Length: 139
Image (cartoon, one colour):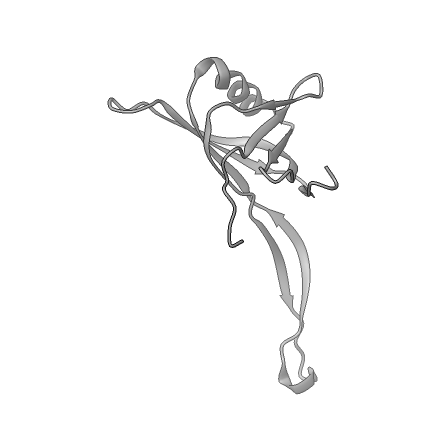
């Protein structure tokens, strides 16, 4: 099969008791991006004049989510995560049973209150440390 339906993908946050709490009304979620630094170590004696590369620091990207904003369900997450200096634990759960767990901090939040549509918020989370990728068998 060429693709899978993303419906029922969840973005969750670890609560104070250690349980996973779903961030409500998410209608779009993307990320995290992953990058790796590369260093050119080509020399005058590199075989066949081909470049030689070594790999260095692994960099995490961001998770962005768009929600239909509900102050009762979202303000506590925004207040706690934006005010805190330590990252929180998050999990993105996929319809096939796999998931990504990561620590992140809320680095941005934008609100949209149009006169002709639903209230929305866009939240950006920056990862700290490595994400854990789990498939259905390791979850």
